Structures are given as C-alpha cells and as structure tokens.
Length: 320
Image (cartoon, rainbow, N blue to C red; front, side, top):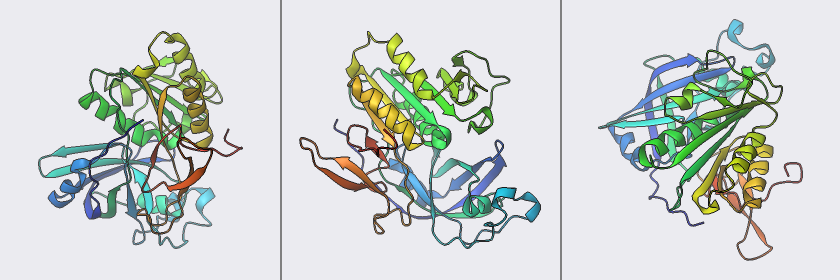
C-alpha cells in the first residue's frame, strides 16, 4: 500500500494552556493554543502524528491529590520529554488549538495535572508519520483499545471533514467501564453492541463498545466487535475497506491478523518509549518485514511511524 505524506515540519513550540480538566477516574483533557509560528508547523499535520512534551519544570501536586499507587515515585526527577498524540487539532487563521487526552500513569503525567489556564507548555512537533487514506476506500473501521483513543478520535474528525463520503464506524474497548478513556460519556451503557458514544456521535459516527468484564457494551475483546462487523459486511469489496487501530500491542496484533487474513488494508499506530522523538536515541525500534523477502529490519517508531502498515509489522510471540 503506497502512502504519501506532506513534507514534515517540526520545531520547538510554546503553547498557552486554555484549560486542563479531569475527564474520568484517571483521565485529564488538556487544551492548548499555539501562536502563529507554531500554526505554520501544524499546517501539514495529519492525525497520528505526535509531540514531545517537556514536563521537567512542572510542579509536583500536593500529597492529598496524588494517587496512592504513585506516592512513592511522585517526586522522582523527570528529565526526558514524553510523547503524546492529539485527540483534536483545529486551525483558525493564525491560531491553532489542540486537545491532549492523557492518563495519569507516572510522575510525568502527574505533573501535567498542575497546569492551569494561562500557563505555558513546551513541546516539540508535530513528529512522525500519521494515518493516510488510500484511493478507493468507502468504509473506515476505527479500532480503539484503552488509551489508543486520542489519535483515532483525531482521525475520525479529519475523515468527517476531508472524506465525508467514507462510511466510518468506531469500535472502543477497555478492561472495564471506568477505564474507557472517553472525554464524554453516555447517560448509560446498554448491553447491546451499538452505543451512542458522544465522542463519536457528535461526528455522526456510530460506535460499538466492548469491555473485558462486560460492564459496558459487549463482554469480551473489542476485536470480536470488529470481526462481527466484517462478517455482517462480507459482501463489501475488500479493497474498499480499511482498518485503523491504536491501543495495546496484543490488540494491534489481533487486529492486524484479522485484517491480513481477509486481505484488508490496515494501518496501526504503534507505541514505544521515546527518549528523543527525533531518531537520535534509537530506542523506539519496531521490527518490520522487508517486502518480497523473509528478512526483517528495524524501523524507528518516531520517524518511520508511529503509524505503520499492519502487513509490515512483526509482532512478538506474546502478542500473536
């Protein structure tokens, strides 16, 4: 599958915090405004690209607001930037606003909760390669696992604007209902597959929810919802369908395996620890197949990805 990308522009930017609010049990939504210089860099932005966020000079929250599980490591020094994908990017003249949905998992994300309206944030980006839409596609299936929501939600909005003729369906999965990283939640969750999740419903996109424990939607992995849709739409020409996915590697492996078995195009957003985000540290290697041979090579998630053609990626035995 040939993918074409606009020339990438990147740089160090300072953004102003417009808001930073809690959006769930451990999720926060940070809204940033970039100036005209940064807006030029984001002119060629595609969903799936990411930024490196500098948290080294952010304050440590008061003890009473630190989750018990993070008390021991909360004061650990944070020197390296952290990679994040945006859930929304909106350009308005010389101003660009962007939403960043994040989960508190360690001292870096914990410090981000102290950002307040009017504060400044320092980022490098946009970095990497995002999602692409090959010609001839008529249906886009968006698969989210856990905190894989941001780039997929960003893609959903972009598809809605740039490719309104493409039918789009979203599949959202997590361990339990409280772990669903939704910015907005339905008034209630039904037992059935089809749910009106505000995050996607606002874009006119139907969605299906799956939880491992059955506390919302389908009981089981989200890939079962995807498989059911593919079975019910088996008469569609495979070349008109594309799958986009972001989430845990085990889920990505299952999505890739299912798509490859049906010879359906699939793009997956990989996640790796990134010390630099610009290809210097070589710490984010992804094993990939060499087309037309049995050989494999390592590509960098930060430069060659984070979005890869699912046919190229070699998953480990634990993920298969």
